[in-house]
Amino acid sequence: LGLLFFALVFGLISQASAQDFVQSYERGKLMLNQKLYFDAIKELHKAVYSTEQGKGHFGAHYFLAKAYYWLPDIQKAMKVLEAAKSLAKNERQQEAHKKLL
Image (cartoon, rainbow, N blue to C red):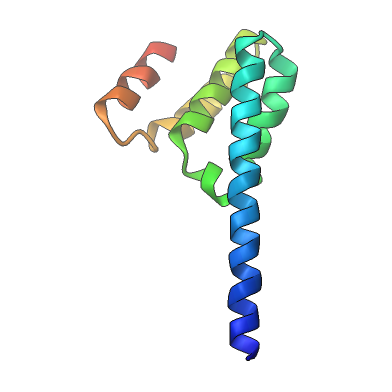
């Protein structure tokens, strides 16, 4: 029974974390498109660094780097972009990464 309870609670936490990622990621992209760079950074930073899904997500890193770039905070943009480089899994992501360099 204890193991079942743990699995249920862990499953709910994981699901909540995934929802947190999606919400922060989507809000961050929307704010970036609206040129609200400080707000975009806040949301995308939360998506990248506060969720397990975000830590390995190329797009979240890419858009966070773009927000820093347009702020402009080039040093932070390059730091996040370097992390994104290792997350690029396909040619499209690799090309997007190169565009920001």
